[in-house]
Image (cartoon, rainbow, N blue to C red; front, top):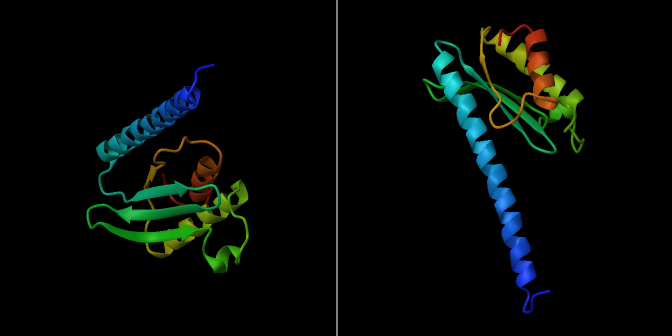
Length: 138
């Protein structure tokens, strides 16, 4: 065992390497998804998803005008109440249904799905399916 704490420095350097590797993977995935969206987008607004451990956010964005047209999230008190944990698939489905209803009220029928750095799995997939069932074309 080396003297003067060099083992701790080695473990710290190894942990930082793993974190930077994961961060680079996430950035590459984000770039790949956004690049594909840019190529396919004509007149459709973009449905962007953000997922944290506790909450789920989704918004429909008009990139030409740079404005958010419709949004829904688990933070909204009228949907989920105060203090409830909303980081599960049921909450994601509720956000998707609410977003689809609000979009149809505004006359939005077709969107491009932007999953960002997240894999199309779990809560992100449930949200997309709920938006489709709500009447939007992805």
